[in-house]
Image (cartoon, rainbow, N blue to C red; front, side):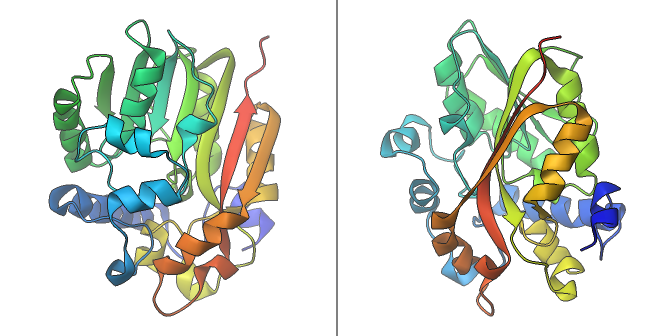
Length: 272
């Protein structure tokens, strides 16, 4: 992967339309069938509860949300780093079936609000059904792409996301949109995978690898540049070496932890 291709927001191997189609197909199938697990090796997938615990959620988190919302798809726990407060407006990029949204809703309370955006119609439908199951009246789900958020300017306090930004074919645009919708002083607190070594071209060009949170990952320096260029300050990206244990389970033929690791990505929008 060259710095030039990444800074332009274009991932090698697949064009944007192919990448979006692969992601939409994969997560539409997951929504319909309830299958779980990032990565491609379904035979080695854990249960969704086991996956959540390994990725940093507490047992209380898993128990606090009705079954069906936790699909075991993330690579971390963004609500743990978001420092949410009562009354906050929270936006979840790539909300899936709503697990992180429902956890955030409990923290922001009745005076707060959570909006989940997902580009897969079947996921949005499933998330809305889960909202009813969880009696989450302060949560709503909207169909849309994270590069073109259906959210008003300067209307959000905190943005969370869980292993989704890597799926975008235009990450700089994702961060520009995140900056647009955040209020001055608002913050970004997401979990994602980052590159630690250049990916083999066959992974970059494989639709399944891209849709499985690997083929579209970017390096920490590239992500730092994207965030800074979007206008963010106080950018902090910290890799999580303990994520290697579950990333190794994502492929039965090779050790993907040689190339990617989970990380927390935090940044702020200036107050002025």
